[in-house]
Length: 116
Length: 111
Image 1 (tube, rainbow over the protein chains, first blue to last red):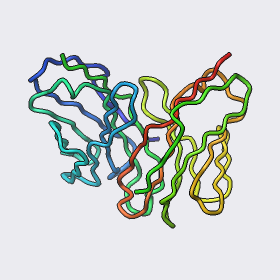
Image 2: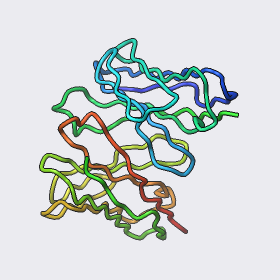
Image 3: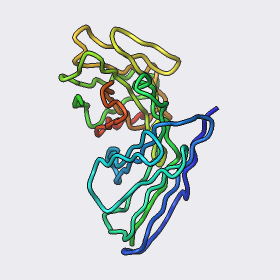
């Protein structure tokens, strides 16, 4: 069966510090991968998605970047965090290929980031 | 992508049936309607998905009228543990890699 791992679960970082959040998926190949952010009490904002190694689509121009160095690894980064980067970051995967567009998203447990 | 509109919040009592309606007037022919549930500090969890008419699983039912411009998620006999945010999404085939969430409906189930 497929599993998704995100770490760390919580993170407190000062303004201006770098960020690296990692997400890995097991049990499937070439998944579509996603990073979402959720501000307190708000809905989910799609940040990045990837359909393959090295292929990253950015949805919202901001202080963050994403990379996919391996098939089942998705990394969210920032060189200098802002206060507004605080939030709940969620990684998700779904089956690959356009024929599976209606397959559901499977989410990790998220990382709660507080920028102080 | 079709925009969705849901009530911001709903209240219910244990044992009642809850119906959450979502409007998606610009839904396209190949779009699917999908619902997720999210508990605090957790990622959303897929509940149910449909294209037209009625779909039922062990958790919920999804009713979609013929014009598909709306859909209704029905939760039978809710319990306190059904308190969560429920998201309605329309997923499009073209560029369907993108999945956009709206604000969702916050359901409070009271004892």
